Amino acid sequence: MDEDESLRRYGLHPTGADLEEVRRLLSAHTRLERRVQGDGDTELMKLCCVQLFNAGNLEDVLLIWRAKAAGMDAGCSIDIQLLCGGGLDETRAHLSKQHLSEAAAALEQLNRCEAAGDFKYFSVDAQSAQYAAYYM
Image (tube, rainbow, N blue to C red; front, side, top):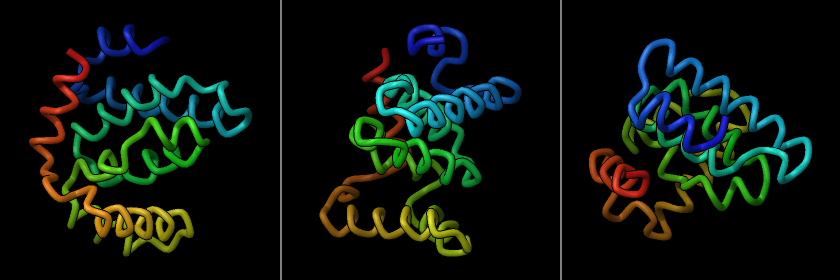
């Protein structure tokens, strides 16, 4: 499946079983990208992250982080804001409660990016609208 097919099949706001399929798709491409940079489809990975962002489930934060951290191309393609579909403060609180090194790394990067001004005008609704305009 490529980016266009995923967008046709699931749209930007998948729910239920479609949301589970988006998670599986992202996980599969994350594994490919981690194995060999370029094996994962980073554009498809970004779309999956946008779809998960729009669902707003805090449980998806680390899945999105793993995708972003899978390689240099994925890191550049997947915006840090995509971690925050459930809200910036909520994401920060969620990550701080996790007892995983990857959660600490994600929180550290989130805080660094916020300090650099990357979240100056951030809101979930504005970010969602920005991605909708990009994909439509």
